[in-house]
Image (cartoon, rainbow over all chains, first blue to last red; front, side, top):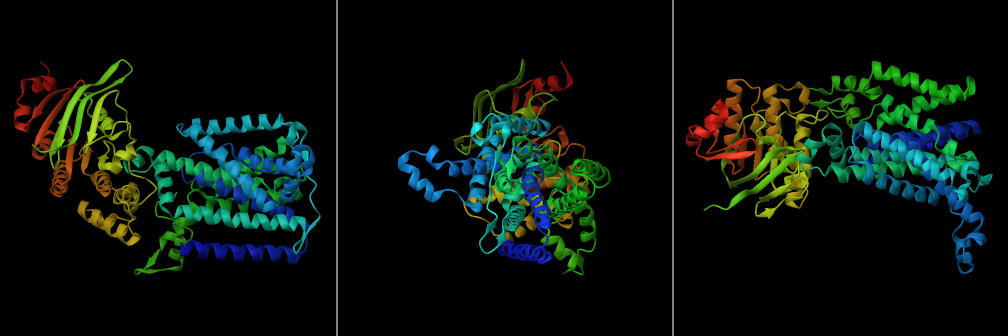
Length: 356
Length: 245
């Protein structure tokens, strides 16, 4: 617990330095680009809780992300049309509560996506391997069809979100969104690291390695998988909730975009799936390369970059970047029984002896 | 008459049209060392899977420690005190030997005690178990670095970490040399002396005869013999089942 608190404080400090560093540069584009990279850190970390720790590959990340985004759109629409959507007796109360601020929308989006994650878990977790992956893909298709046909949130036309230009104290609204995404990233990484080093994390690892043996050791595998789908889904929804305010116009094609599904898988795979460091490294690497490619070549080349890197890593370093570094870290993990800087770093990054 | 720790009544299981278990009755008393033998396909592993909850029996009843455990999931039966090792070792490949032992300590020993073991207590228990099975020097190694016999020992140690009342060792000696078989038998007897009831499913008759106090024979899903090892191996029906009539 003390270690997690220390981690949280360090991550918050790094996040604060990052925020003020970019603010010092005073270029709004960096906030736009940084927001996307941070969003991918949250998505990749969330995917990794189910896909990396438990070994259940989720192809439906975009659906959870979109549920978060559309929950914000729905609440925004309610706020805009209070007189229309609420009975007269409740209009006064609704006008006090609505519109909700972004942190509240994030919590709401997290709850919606978490519940969908839990429901998906109940329906699909008796499936394994490719069957589970296909079921999550089907979930994305079903949810997208529902959204396309839900007129209230814009249906296939999409929905416009008019966001304020500025917010008190912070200034520009994009800086505010960027700051929120830093906080979310810190939270997601802290949650992932806490899980790894806990009883829950060991339980997840046994599910990944051998479910039958896990049950024989007393691990309640079904319950743990439900916890994993819920936490993973909730974090993805939280990443999606501020998205309509970032993009200004949300339509099903962008919320359920292939880029979210592909990136949230590719980033942990390239970074390494058994430590919280993997998704972070993968998201930073791929996210930054994609942002650079967007302004230098074209955004159309982004998925090509991801695909090529993924193929390269699967062949050259199937354990990801963390796996490559891990052997080096552990090569001199002790010096006559005394911990070395490598061993300390390995413990901080939770590079367990068995981590892939 | 001792109270049975495990009582199986009229247990039946089919796979499609194939009858894997056909009305098995079996009783195991506290502290007993029971050998379970039978030719390939006789239903030994299916019986173990039904006892442990990996498979659900279609007929009959399994009582453990005075409670009916039918319908309980495998992990719930482990929490009640029933642990098993697998015919083919199934270690958690990305966890070290010590971490493999932590799992039952975290999930079963803690649940049964109703209180959480402290990290220091868990580490001490892991150390004790690795010493008991002779894996202390390899506690931080991955299962892939273990030899075949060490892998078998890890399976048994992991089952032991669940602090079981009943240990079911499913072909724990398959593929081992004579001296290694001796090591495992010695280890099982050592565990039994700690008060753990053990059911040994095995093909190696030398090991079964030296270990078992009682022997049960399954053939084609039916129990054909149950008694003292010397009597059972001289039973004409058992000889017929193994050598052909």
